[in-house]
Length: 145
Image (cartoon, rainbow, N blue to C red; front, side):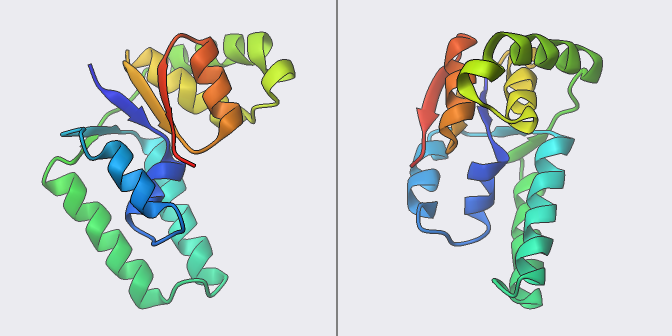
């Protein structure tokens, strides 16, 4: 089985942040990480938004995108297409069961639903609300803080 790594952690591999080292350590033992279209959209959008805010330059964004592509090419990130119908059904159930207690956002719940749908054995995140939903759903969790 594989680990599910939230895009909020994956972005730390491509943009230097305060807890990038902790994120790298948390995912280092994993030979390959499943990588779905939602994660890719969030990472690429974050890179563009950081450029738009002048937090990174266009050259830094391009270099980060190159590193992302390299990780896909060498198999560090393994493209995976979830069963979206199943994912949304799970997300709807998880929202009904946990949103009022955890205050998790819909995207956070969607990531947990993908992990469950893909039969991940663990979940890596930096978001405590998302962590709570993952834990309540029976996933082994790692919080990168």
